[in-house]
Length: 124
Image 1: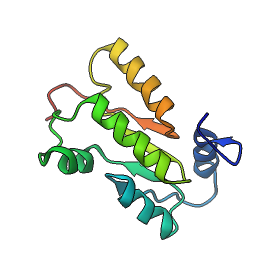
Image 2: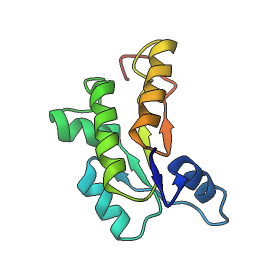
Image 3: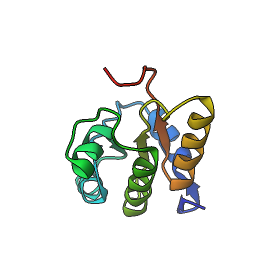
Image 4: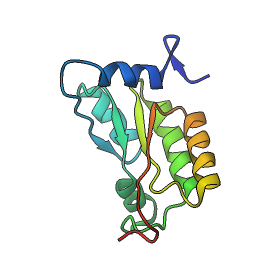
């Protein structure tokens, strides 16, 4: 479904991480910032929950951005670039079942990876 040249973004991300060189991944908060990162030569993009919270609601990343908002932003970013996107999914947005849904939704959005924090809510 979400493929570039017949290859899933998760496969491309794993290949980048397995390389000999350090992988530098800049943070982005929307499709434009991700396209800029790709354009200047970065091989992947990290969708920052802080940047997304600031750009969507103008407030710090204190648990105010919903899973739906993050997944929709991830979808727009993944659609805008050809490089793998790693999406910050905070703490998975709830209990174990919520985490499963968050991961499934992130995969469907086209990202190559998901970052989930091991933290208590609210964020400290």
